Amino acid sequence: MDFLTELKKRAGIVDEALERFLPSASNYPPLIHEAMRYSVFAGGKRLRPVLTMAAAEAVGEDPLRVLPVACAIELIHTYSLIHDDLPAMDNDDFRRGRPTSHRVYGEAMAILAGDALLTLAFELMTRTVQEGAADPHRVLRVIAEIAHAAGTAGLIGGQVADLLFADKDLDGNTLEYIHRRKTGALYRAAVRSGAILAGADENTLSSLTEYAEYLGLAFQIKDDILDVEGDQSKLGKPVGSDQKNKKATYPALFGLEKAKEKAGQAVAAAVQALTNFDRRANFLRELAAFVVTRDF
Image 1 (cartoon, rainbow, N blue to C red):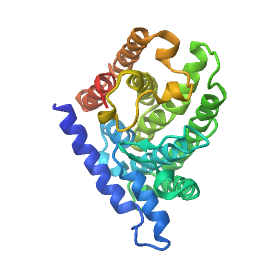
Image 2: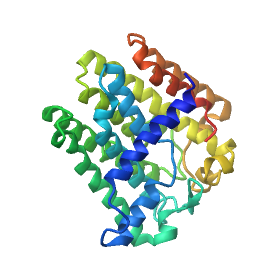
Image 3: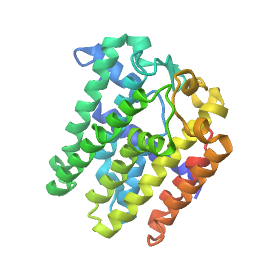
């Protein structure tokens, strides 16, 4: 498998679906729809929706049947980035090589664009029922799963802790708490959602959950590393922003080499969690390796 080619192909499927699901920029009021589309189609690897589809595939389901939920997770991720870039948060001027939403549309419209994407995400989740693609009880479970991951027990809670501990000394357990929630919670929900919609039994779901938790941790550690030694032209944003914002990171706490070691250990644990899966989980295995070798 040429992993990058396959990833691009799957990301393209997600992009085509997002194009269908998002309101046209010409819909009234046009400015908000333009702002939503600006951030959604600013680039990105589409790892979270691709994970949802790959988890369904690993359980034996047609990944196209979970596309609405996969896209919903991408919209939640994009909303979080819009808000994360705001002056009140990280105050970043660039994201994925382009000016951030608030720099183009102003703070108020950026906030509303993020809110609109979050709201649309939950509307999209119901499409799997409306289109007869999934059992309603499974969809309800997935909605609860994603809501939990996006709330104070997950993404929001991690962001709050990240803000509160900025410019403060903290230990490895606290740093892991932040990463497992700010980044890891949505990875976990992405994988679990695909598996639940595909009808995974509890043992299978438990293994995929373990995979997702280690994968999300590895991804965030690698992000921390790239902020130190990454190539700005490939990342699409300035390096060194974590240090600028006095954020706690793995390289800052453990040193660069130890951070790389921890990322590798997390990936190994993620792959180990897939031991009992057949070749249908190969994409998940390849994705774990990609997370720590990527340079963007």
